[in-house]
Each structure stands twice: as C-alpha cells, then as structure tokens.
Image (cartoon, rainbow, N blue to C red; front, side, top):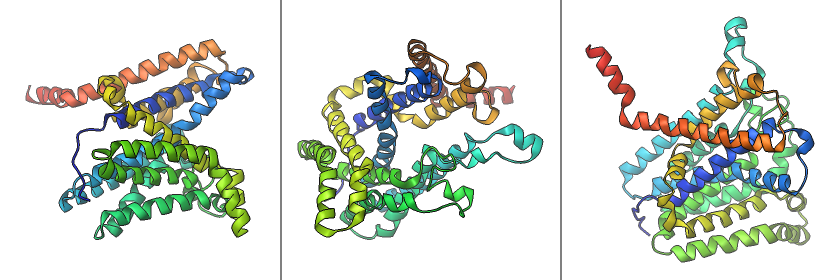
Length: 365
C-alpha cells in the first residue's frame, strides 16, 4: 500500500506534552519529597503513573521517526529522513553526556567523574533512533512490509531475552559501554528492555502511515484490544508457553513481565489519545511542549540537577528529600510552570529569529 501524506497528528504531540509534564513533576517530587511520606494509596498511584513516563517517551520517539520516514514514498525524501534521524540520534546522545558533565573537576583536576558515563533516557533514545535508521537502511530496497515485520520481531526479542541480558556479568566491560547494559554502576536507564519500546514505537509509526487515515477505527480498536490482552494475559500466555515448550526463559519473563505489561498500557493510552484527536488541536500549549521535549528536558536538568555547573535545586537551594507532601506538590507545580515558560519563550525567540536579528543589528552598527 502506498503511504499517504497526512496532516500533523496532534494527539502524538499532546501525548508527548503530557509525558514531559509527568516527567517534570516526577523528577521534582522524587528528588525532594521526604522518604517518610512515600506511603499510601495516593503515592502508589503516583508511582504507577510515573513509571509510565519513560516507556511512553521511548515509544513515541520511534513513532515519530518512522511516521515521518514512511509517510512519503519518495526515495530522496526517505534518504534525507534517515540522515536526519542519524543526526538526531547523535545529538540526543551528546546531550545525554553533556547534562552529566561536571565542569569543575575537569577544569581543576583534568578529569571527569564516573557519573559522566551513566546512561540516562537520552542515550537510550539516541541509540534507538540510530538502530531504526540502520534497520531501515538495510531493508530500504525491499517493500515497506518487510520493515513492518522485522521491527516487531526485534522488539519481541528484546523483551523475551531480557532475563539473559539482566543476568550477564558486565564488570569487565569499559564503563562507557557497560553502563548501556546494566544499572549496577549508576545508570538510570539501560538499553534492555527500554530499546524494545523504541522499536515498538517504530512499528506503530509504520502502521500510522498505512492505517491511520483510511482505517482509523480498525487501528484504534486493534490497539485497545491488544493493549487489554497484554495487560491481562501476557504473563499467563508466557506461562503456557513455558509449560508447552519447557523453556525456562518463558517462565522467567512471565514472573517479571515488566516489558509486555507496560506495553499493553501504552497501547491503551495511544488508543485513548487517538479517540481524542478532534480536541487535540485546541491544546496549543500542550502541543507546543510536546514538539520541544528535548528543550524541556535540558532546561529542567540544569535547574533541578545543576548539570554542567553543579548549581541545581537538589544540591544548592534545597537539601534532598526534605519537603512534605503539600510543599513538594506546590513546588512541582511552580517547577512545571517555570520550565514550560522558559521552553516556550526560548522557542518563541528562536522561531522569530530574535537572536540572529539582534546580532545582525549590532554587526551593522
């Protein structure tokens, strides 16, 4: 089927916007709230929702890349999109390391702290984008349906073989590499199983180009049903495969079924946001934030964690984990407003060419 060129899909931007706001409040509350109040049903609900943020980001990154890649069949267009995806992947990885860089030990002692090598969400997303671009490059001469088959098979493999990756000993690997595969040395995220969500997102992005315009009801209904099945029956199915095939790996995945369980929830969320597409263009601020999530992430990291200069809220202004529930909730709201305002203001200046115009005026005078 020939891909169709469609207008902007607003619910993807809105979903990214919701996810980035969830990330802002999640990081603020987790960093500053007292340990003593981390109990009760409200906290457990918050913790569950916070756990959805990263998988949604990983999935949506793959969706956007492949949707933009496959929505036109022009060969020249797709080559440009692949190149752009590679540069974007490298840019995201670069920012992941910049935000972990501490300037002062480098200036005064000529070295970097080991925290610099810790892998966070940006590095994992960047690697995912590069992998998708590579896979498409390898199968680009074949029909798009080949890509639609290879990508989900790889994603399922990532989730199924996770116990093997988890149990492997990476202690002899160089820090710059091993931190992508294990959290034992301080990494916040690792490639497995989170790379699987980027690949699933790539598969969804390919389906958008084929189904979203002409078979939207089928697409939404299918995602909703598959989401329910994954949430409620994926562990049971894996157990049945273990009994049937006597493969211990299936039992291990069933007993720690994070990957497929979260994936089902993501499918449900996507189906709900698709249904709400008619109202999404009205949510202008949310859509704009969803279009500039990298900027939001960078600004929030500098403010909350200090990043390059070590002057973050968690180190300088407030001692970690000292705020009560009401104070941390109010602080999170202020934090969201400030970071969102700075992001929108920055891109308003950037889009209007304010910096370039100012520079040109000074140079001419």
